[in-house]
Image (cartoon, rainbow, N blue to C red; front, side):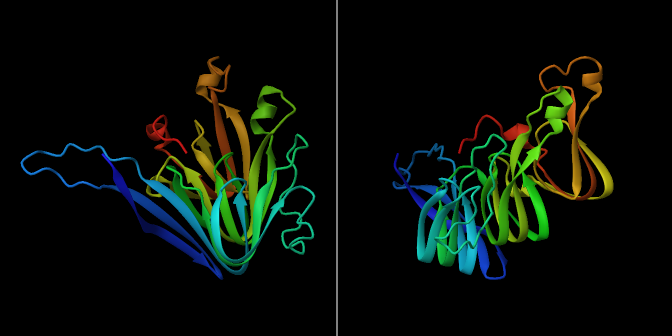
Length: 260
């Protein structure tokens, strides 16, 4: 059976001269049901696309995320060397090198218009930064807009626990503006936990982002103390201090059936 895809706005988030818009596409059968026969129909999963609206502002997309854009927008790949001359260095130093020496390249835009990302079956989580920093899980970053610099954060937590000298490199967003992350988990199922001099321990990779006012470490869990922590099991992620954590308790329920 053939389908036609219908788009609608799922949610928006605005800050200053920028706006993020999540477009959702659902499948509708091109043929109506036959009279007198039940229509047993398994429709394709929905697709989602991010539209980044800027008006005289800057935006940054994950490399390869761009599908098309409309408006008076300049575009440039940015890396560890800094913003470069093509855009007057408007994102100078926005993206720094990974610990391995290779650059983490993003695509930077400046001007006025709308930028559209490639459709995905993952869910898009929107958030806002107000003069703070956010450390994002690998593969979760999609885009940001406003006065936000994208750099790298080397997370040594698990490496130190197992005696390795190499840390995990994660995106770090700093400044004020709006951002979009992707996850198999719908936004409604996320818990945004506010910690104030508190401790949060998480068994499993359920945290998609956290503010850098929190101290992160990896510690042995009860299973680890019993000798079961040989391949990562038996460890928990610990967050201490004051800040916010984006936690997805239902992530195990969504794994295996969703692909980008």
